[in-house]
Amino acid sequence: MKTTSTSIPVGDIEVACTVVGDGTPLVVIHGAVGLGATYMRALDSWADEFQLVYYDQRGSGATPLGDPARVSFAGAIEDLDGLRAALGVDRVNLVGHSAGAILAALYAGTRPESTSSVVLLNPGPPLNPDLFQAFQQEMASRRTPEDNAARMAIEASPRFQQGDPEALERHQLNTFIPFFRDRATVDTVSLGFTEITAANVQAAPQRMIGSVGALDPMGTFARVQCPALVVHSELDPLPVEWAHALVDTIPGADYVLLEGASHFAHIEDAGRLANAVLPWLAKHAE
Image (cartoon, rainbow, N blue to C red; front, side, top):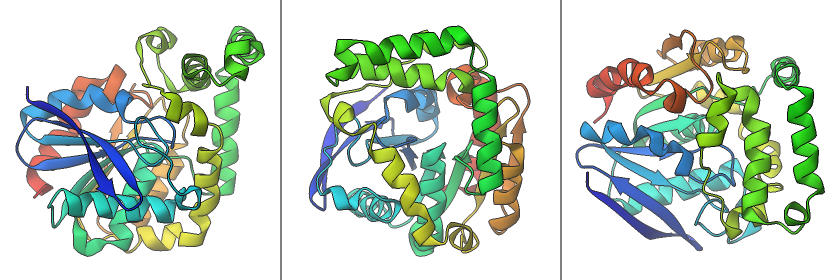
């Protein structure tokens, strides 16, 4: 399978990209800033039908932070539009996961002329305060005392306190335990943390979430004009009511519930996710 890694000038930074396969491009948007796209590479099998363009957002993976003031959803929309233009794509197909799905929907609502289709994989966090509180409570309820003790041990370690990427990645994966159906899967996942990640993973996500209100997100979602698919996994700690709210807000959005699947369905339930999404993309992606 043809794979090319490169960096693309976008504004004040060089955006790290990995392109897998040929055919109609799908731009894959990873979750919270700081993670990078490494964990999304579980979608590589989709390259049998589409070209996958993975990119590390500003301050994530191998992409530098650049101007800190641009770490916001508004800045991320501009970066994504710059990437689209640099790729020579007039209308882009987007596949976003978690917070990356929020970005994908915001892009589609603010750049309808530049968006061909959008797939939202377990979008979150909820932007409704009550649903966000329910999400936090569910996350906490899924953690064991051993999980919390392991997290505290990592936080007390000199390597974590010195910002070591490996220690920070273990800490992040510990945080993600409630997102997995099988907690043993956590030990098999790589987030690809780098020195860039280590410098930004703690501060950048909060800055991103704090910036979303300025964009009137629900109003923006209502302005999406392209075909949209919302995918929610039954075992995701994100409330299903949030997925329903998005489906009700995005005009004409389609909806798939993956029974028995987790937040990281592309890792733990790859075949079922592909069976749900690829036929939809074959119909709607241009």
